[in-house]
Image: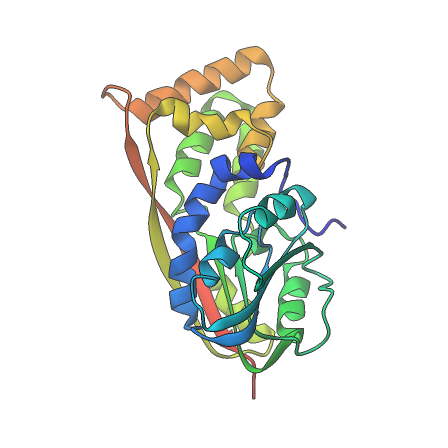
Length: 268
């Protein structure tokens, strides 16, 4: 079984699709996790490196290690910083290439819902943490909190029967519903478990800016659009544009995006 269902192609493509928004979420996750110092921090599923780079803003962190399944994303992340404290490497969240108790803290942002064996990845995160270490994560509230995705998939499902299954899959991903992250953290034996929500804004300059990620090769929406025939793609694009402009001239729009966040502590 693959360790990731997220379609990846290039770091630049991910930045257009999600990276520009994960940069906004990263500081909120770090603040919620309550980690402000440590010799070593692990970023699991680091993507293009936005969480790791946010951690580097704190000089009280020693080593920051980002690991991701995608070579393209790791290559992109490595080009973003020359800070000697950071290392980016390709690896599997379900089989972390580190010994037991290697890190003070471990964070993961917007990746666990794309790992079929997420429970295994969570156990691996806990394994590599030292006693007393904090483990935290964020996943989108895909069904109720991710407005841009809801708008796209609801519109597409009205026109394409094939989009109905895509929508159901997107809105029922594991660890993206109320209480699921907290339960997973408790099942992994973590203490002081807290689950909460954090909301950012996704700001688009125009419909073309909103649609641009759909023309790429990164993420589930681009995967879906890339498989459409020309006529269906045009119909869906026109319908989504109507939803975007919503009776006003094309131009800037801002949509809320809410993530579940969870933290817990490894028993001392």
